[in-house]
Length: 119
Image 1 (cartoon, one colour):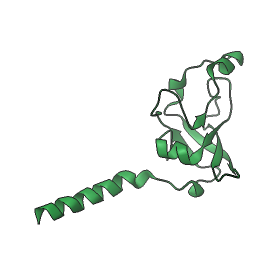
Image 2 (cartoon, rainbow, N blue to C red; image 1 turned 180 degrees about the vertical axis):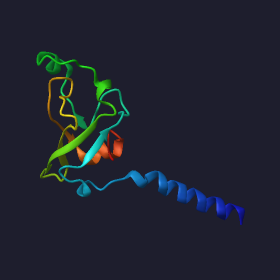
Image 3 (cartoon, rainbow, N blue to C red; image 1 turned 90 degrees about the horizontal axis):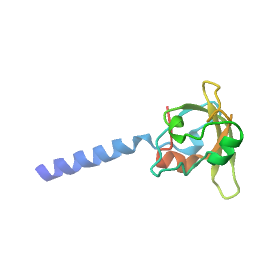
């Protein structure tokens, strides 16, 4: 009996952990999201420009500064292969790295990896 109760609690806890999973089709233009910390040293699913392009445009190439930023979805496009690409910009109107107003992200992969999360 005790093992059954523990198994049920484990299943309930596991489903609550995955409660943040958001279907990419549920995201619409105007939704506010937050940039999370990437699993790898670089962002993989948010297409931030490389450091040399940021510096050329007069910006500061510090990727740690974007973690925790609130962003708003400005455009959603579905590619032929089925991937959903969104354009995002800062909610406060500032540019990313003081050089780029908008960046693109692969919505499904960014949500799964935690690089983006819906608020």
